[in-house]
Length: 253
Picture 1: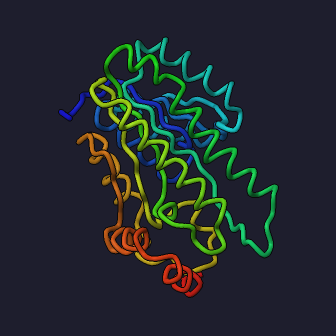
Picture 2 (picture 1 turned 135 degrees about the vertical axis):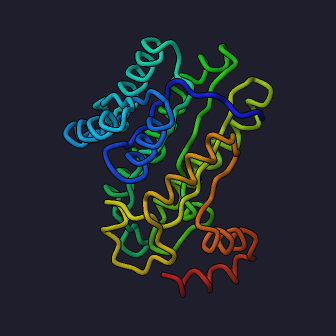
């Protein structure tokens, strides 16, 4: 597809990490950004940083775990700004969910945020975008969603859902003027990865990851994956026979 020009964007999970970085990147590229999250103080700090750079970020306190309320808020913003050009479902959480020590509360929390919250965000103004024959929806999945990683059943599955959901949308929306992009990050420095107590190969700086995301979105790429050193072997794992994958995955945990 031809590149779009973006006037307005909404980014969820913009209090920190990739969401914060992408919201600021978009704003510095002339986009009016509605940055959503649960922590007002962090969103206000983001807005102040953007303003100091001559950019526009508007803080929106919103919790994607409240799916219906989030949809109403996004639709209200869409109407207020004359139509959102870009919606990025970035909000997500992680954490171990090992099959031998399965924790339903943690599993449910991951599903509520990464599956229900993301789908609600993407669906909120999709009909309006189709009607306008213009728009772009983006979901931040993960390289971890390409196969079921040991010890992270809920997280891997939630990111696999988002990737497949976006793939179907991409097929359905061809010819409508609405673009679809799935982002597959590897390990990126953030509050989320700071809690990990396992090796994180090819850990990327947030700024580098954001630059790749932003450029991929502006180019209308259907998929953006990084870093290549991790994305390439993960794609190979997708086609690996199950017995071989199982043996490999056990050694990776």
